[in-house]
Image (cartoon, rainbow, N blue to C red; front, side):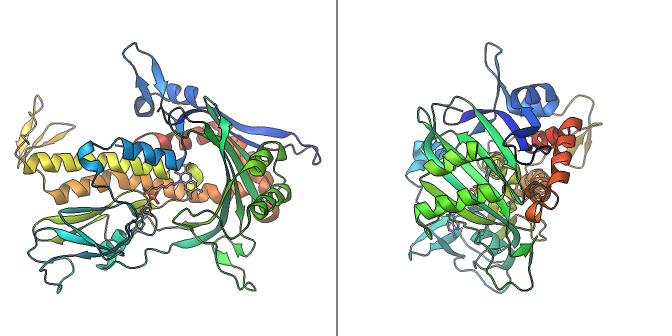
Length: 439
Ligand SMILES: Cc1cc2nc3c(=O)[nH]c(=O)nc-3n(C[C@H](O)[C@H](O)[C@H](O)COP(=O)(O)OP(=O)(O)OC[C@H]3O[C@@H](n4cnc5c(N)ncnc54)[C@H](O)[C@@H]3O)c2cc1C
């Protein structure tokens, strides 16, 4: 909360239709986040509002730069963990000591598994490997094929994202308004993002557009071009000089008829530019999110983008990754309580009946037996699969809709659609449903 800045407003704007030469932008949709959350009631409000001892309610909806969030996570690790964190390691293989390799799912007799890295080092033994290694996850490969390979390549959506970062450009902003500008064949996004406690915030401008060489995920017949890279390492766009990156984005602002007055200054003052292609990754997998690695109870499990890479149009990937971490951590704590003899069956609720190891009453079932790690990992997946799959699907649809089609083919339809969605409250529900924690 201290490292980010509260998001107060989300709005979608488009150029006024009546006068095409006008530089004014109509507001199609405007959401006041505080009112929206407080008025939603129920689980949404409970999950997104923090009440302090004096009864003051704070809506917990923040904007933060990715790097600042990572700093917060690392800085708050317990001191006993911090010296175990190693960066710049690339997992190359998972080694199951003295295992029989005959049967992928039934590897025999080990005391945990070892991780081998590309620098030649190995670490371990571990009894649980958590693959939170992003959209091209090596651990996901291992769960699906029994081998660490090159990661799921996904399907190129034909949507490209360019963004410019003006470090410190948000100065001392105390709140963030996220403004989306709809144009022809693309849209722009402008906001400020927290950079850490007592640090100046950054300003970012995003341009989301359709790839000229594609119609949706299909390459145009006559085109012999490569799809845009997914940029999994978030590397800065070093293919172009800084000036070229600026000119490129500013030209796109003009060609998509987006407002120079908001996006323009950020792009002009930016010192970092990024470009990536959006890929769709199938949320449906028969193998699930976890796999038993050895008979002594060693498992691998996925979290974050590794489990459910989603297009970024609802701004939810990192939020969902954090929720995965929370749910998975609570399951691991439960497992450790069981393994270390701290677990005891919860007291049965009033007016209940015992049915084969569990206690049931009308609307709840309380487990009376300790659960295995397999069950706990499945419970984690079951809790997190549906919310993340649902955001993945909605986000993919929204991405195409918001660009307005090739050369603005359906941009007028999009503008009316968004105004209507806001009017009837659907946009509000989609945003709230995605953001509210499902733990
Ligand atoms: C343009 C854009 C805008 C976005 N905007 C938002 C937003 O507004 N809000 C939001 O919540 N989310 C947003 N997201 C999504 C968000 O960035 C991701 O969902 C989030 O970073 C996922 O976190 P993760 O830890 O699962 O994976 P990552 O952040 O990708 O981290 C994975 C890590 O694993 C490492 N790794 C990969 N392979 C290996 C290996 N073999 N061995 C060891 N390490 C490995 C990588 O180097 C990386 O450090 C956006 C994404 C994009 C592309």
